[in-house]
Amino acid sequence: MIDKLGTDAAQQWARGSMQAHGMAEFWPDGDSVACQLRRLRCARWWRRVLRGVLAKDTEQCAIQLGFVSKDRDIYCSNEAVQRDRGMRANSARVLEQTYLENEFGQQVPIAELAAKSTANRNIRLAELMTRISGMDMIAQETGHEGLFVTVTCPSRMHPCTTVGGRVRPNPSFDGTTPQQAHRYLCRQWNKLGAALARAGVQRYGFRVVEPHHDGCPHWHVLIFYPEESSRGAVSRAVLRSLFRRYFLLNDSPDERGAEVRRVKFMPIDRSKGTAASYIAKYISKNTTGFKLETDLYGEPIMSTIERVQAWASTWRIRQFQQIGGAPIGVWRELRRVNPESVDGAPLPDALGKALSAVNIGQIGGRVAVGFQLYTQAQGGPCVRRRALAIRLLKQETGEVNRYGEVRAPDVIGVEAQGVNLHKPAHMVAMLGKLAPTVARPASARIESERCQWRHITSAHIKTEGTQAQREALRPWTRVNNSTRTHWTDGSTGRDVAIVSRSKTGRFRGWSGSPGDGEGRGGGFSQPPTPGRSAP
Image (cartoon, rainbow, N blue to C red):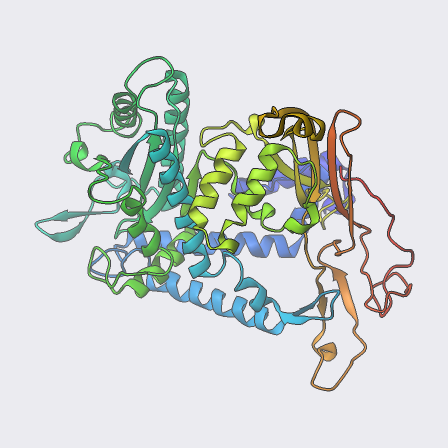
């Protein structure tokens, strides 16, 4: 029907039809009406949407029937756990059976590559603790105070209540889903952030989301702040007042137990340990269970991890989030840069410090110290995004997805502008150690190193002693390791460093000879364009 109508008429008909069937809330997002209509015609899009709806509706029925509690199925229903377990098993099986090959001829299953990313629980735990510990070090160095806050939802959002130690249905429960409760907390957090900005209180830290035994979410927030706001007020008092205003006084402040349970403050006592230790338990409890055996309710920790992950997956809730600080995307991208490719280049001072920071672990230093130094190089823990010293370098691909929308730009490296601090050679020759340090404008665009991976069929996986003809699909990336480096000598009065790798959009064959341009045997129909400058 949609195909026979014009765009405007098709949109009107589709909206009316979905509204008549009670499906108006499923109207798709899209860059244009044409893209939205393509989604409505796509069976894969509908399958993905309806699977999510089925999972949420089934789980909400279990909650309303009283099946989700510490007396029955804690955190989420057993059906949700089984569904999530099956999805993870299917994903693992697909990853194990799907092989990729790079330009060096290395063939590995995707599961092996995923095990080296934050999809690996151990790596995720290590990275989260690195970031939290780095923030804690900054707070200690700058003399900032810390506060640990636990916030939860009003009673009407909790399906169950506890009377005399026994679980009972909550008579005031209004049917709020865990996802809706989490969105409520997010809205209140946004209001809190705006109020803190108006009050001149800078803050940074970390947030962890967990479910109560009945599935209703609550937040643990570790927040650092200067002792005084920019307006001369005591930051601690402002924070406590605004937390109470937006998480307690805004909704049912007089209900039983609200004063005790809705907002809990715990000042950081460094005589008992670091600030990171206050939130470490919650990070561990939701990743690997490191140094934990049971949870708050006496459940085995590995069972808790599985059930909480199923809960977060069902309700599409992000469990960990950094508050303020330098962006983690740039930190990860800097670790892809080979320091040897910029050795001797006149880099902006901030970029040089950041590159040293991300590689500190390679020389035996603490990675948390590296994150601390990286954050300081970016401008500090309270730096605004528009004031960042280092940003991601991106490249438009011009490619479109199945719905006709242009793909987001690819991240290909980092870029920075600033000053290069150095001692001019002629001044060193004349004055020696007394030579002054001169700041000269500098900029850099550095493309990170990646292998180019492409999917190969099982029939073309190499076996021992066999060199099969390797046929592949479209490559996953457009990066190869043909490095081109350029920088000025400063004679122009501005230092510019560019490290680029040829981006052609096609796969380079291992033989190095021109191929048919379709990724078969050879490689490029034409050699890559030399000296491509990054956007």
